[in-house]
Length: 366
Image 1 (cartoon, one colour):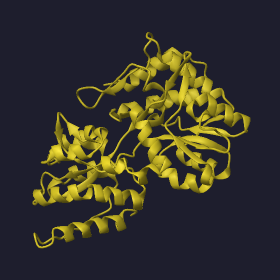
Image 2: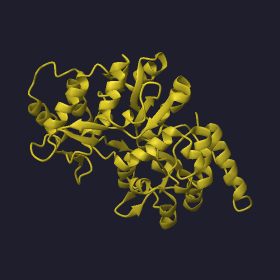
Image 3: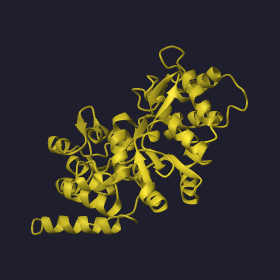
Image 4: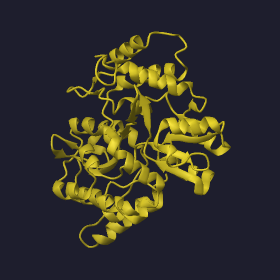
């Protein structure tokens, strides 16, 4: 477990800080944040007192009665980035302690081939890639990334009030930007010799072998990209792309990790103190130094040390154009299918509006 050394230091610090106030027996176990919800709900009374989870699980955990609301909510709100507080809140009630703010994506680019100015637009990036017989990559098999093209257009997708089903207007036929405008823009991008739809792993392989000089990914690849490109490793917010004659800033889904306190804990006061300790300024700074994870704490996010990390800086710059991932399960496959057709150049020749209508209907299915 990558966090073992970090968590040992944090727990030791907690015990030293509260020495003499209680007898502590603190252990921790490996559990992926994405599976936390299922593991916890299956046995709340025997579950961990304090646990880490991805923010898109908040609604389910709160509905199951698994989360002890945060007592000193105003203090926690004042310390953390607004987006992370929003991610931890339901109906103005804060249910968890923000831990990180780095689950998102941005642009990596090789400065040997792409200037900072070119990196501002996808047109510039694709032109530079094609001229150098190299590639810009983005994973169009993943609806998580495909959201980029629709997010700042006025076209909408999100959860209905039931918290399960979606609404989707990505097939909209009126307005300044219509669904078909986005589809045509994606086809134009796919036609560029400088573009390839590649998975995250394939992006990194291309970075290492020199065939890829730009791509969309996240902080988890920052060390490997830096190793491959060295001093020429660039990172920035996502570029704009050309759609219906307009330059549109590419959007992104964002997310964060949260610390929750089990509502069934036998020691809710101490569990809450531990959750706050794990997420305080000092330990978020330590987490960044040891694990390179982006902080939710405002003071750490504004620090000079953090601004020396191009990847974290790019993610923070992109946050202005990001949206919390709040979609139901039926969002993913229809969007991936549609984008896969666009990446392949629409080989079937099916009418674009028909494809958009089918996608929106499937995403919104009850």
